Length: 229
Image (cartoon, rainbow, N blue to C red):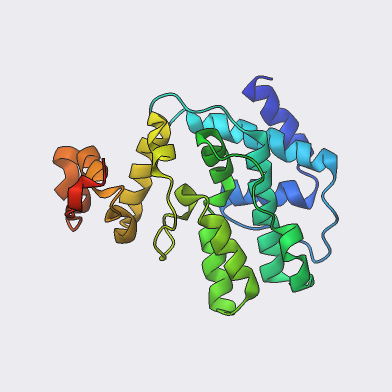
């Protein structure tokens, strides 16, 4: 479907909370929620996937190199994670026993397509994480969200904790993802990421002559036996 036709369909479909929540978060940075949200129906999921596919290819026009193909499953999974996180923060009527059900781990292999498709919405999860942390730093949901983000490093770069087990070769396997990954680290000026042994050398090479201009405080680290290669 052409993007202009997709937009017309999407505008006509903005009638339920799940889609409204996703579109308003993407478009104006606000969350739209009702106190008694209904269960997400199959048709609502399809509408959200249509919207996110359109958003992905619109955003991908600005990506460096050739963007990976859009992945419906990863995008919808991330949309539900964001939606349920917002509901928990604002209303918190579900019990802690429902966390595993409402916040499942992604059940497929993570590849560049999944990383960038999920990031359409997972990029907002660190903000929600910090919001919940400020409300209750002992909230059991925090552990689950952190565990999720430790598997989706591109979306977690602006969090304060250091990257966990980082499959860096996955990020280096796709030129588009690699440059976007480095760009986000630089924008966030996250020293934990910029000084990571698997990232530091290649990131400084990526910055080249603009390194001091873009991130003057980033220093090269010494790695025994050059483990970054």
